[in-house]
Image 1 (tube, rainbow, N blue to C red):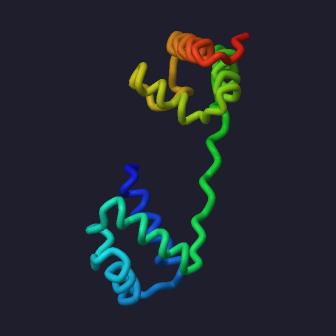
Image 2 (tube, helix red, strand yellow):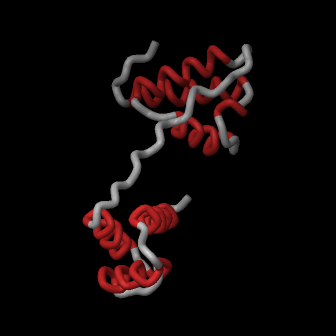
Length: 137
């Protein structure tokens, strides 16, 4: 999801949470950003609208925590464990490893990688750890 779409979603969630009817919502958009519709907002005015909602008492919900460790077949469990250790040491989420799998192998999730691909992910994370001075075991 793009940053723009995420911000527009936040605006509509804030509208709902604050219980604004359409007329009041559109007048707020016009007062703060000079537009009548959220689709006409640019990044700067989007931030102004979100700040106004927060000023009015809206509190954005906390970000969802990362996903759980992927379930791996027995032949891959050790490699997934190593990947998990590297991610924890670097304070990164599973989304980071999923992004690596996507860039390296065009596979969306780590758990869908075959053992050979997992070995390559471990190698890449080992290289990253050495480059950033983190311990490699």
